[in-house]
Amino acid sequence: EAGVTQFPSHSVIEKGQTVTLRCDPISGHDNLYWYRRVMGKEIKFLLHFVKESKQDESGMPNNRFLAERTGGTYSTLKVQPAELEDSGVYFCASSPAVGGSLTDTQYFGPGTRLTVL
Amino acid sequence: AQSVTQLGSHVSVSEGALVLLRCNYSSSVPPYLFWYVQYPNQGLQLLLKYTSAATLVKGINGFEAEFKKSETSFHLTKPSAHMSDAAEYFCAVSSPSGSARQLTFGSGTQLTVLP
Image 1 (cartoon, rainbow over the protein chains, first blue to last red):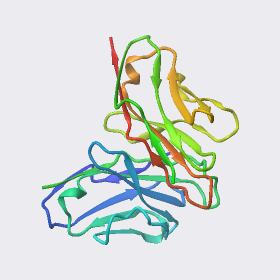
Image 2 (spheres, each protein chain N blue to C red):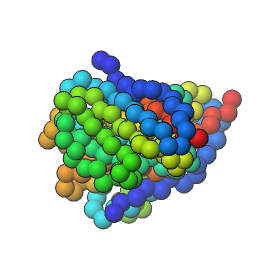
Image 3 (tube, rainbow over the protein chains, first blue to last red):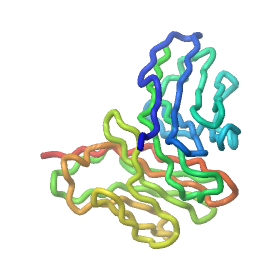
Image 4 (tube, each protein chain N blue to C red):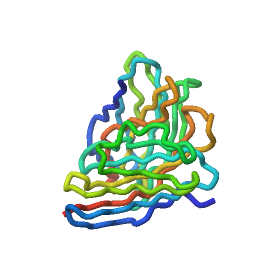
């Protein structure tokens, strides 16, 4: 079974540009999460999809960030326009079906390292 | 609000020595607790999780952790370190209240295993 995949693995852009990160969850997982780790800091929650709906987006830093999950499958996270402080590693995770337990394991992808110059 | 504190951003042990990585949590209700490991160029992998069943939790690769409510701790241990244990380790908590499933992470501990 394929794990969570993320693309690209690295992205280097200039301030003011747009970047789109993609996450493909484990097949059949209804829950999809985005997290971010800014260098030297802890991993922080950004948002949570249940299927195609945003369940919780309390961690999104501002309106420059837009997340979508088309048809409840893969998800994209767009940053427009990017700022220097957006640099970090963006992780995606997925977990099984809706109605699952709070202790359900979240399976993480390898992350996308974003550098904004 | 809940939080996680990992004491020691870097820990070094000799191969064969005891591994002890510290995690303390703050939560208004009994939490669910997790330890994840990240090897270079890989995603986070679950080592073990506490779900209020048994206080001593055994995980993969010989790791275990004990939930101590009185100390608000969930320290990770392994009796004998192996070179392959070198990685970054994260403690995380999720709230059992409501429908929230977000994980709150500590800042991570980089484990170095010396030959």
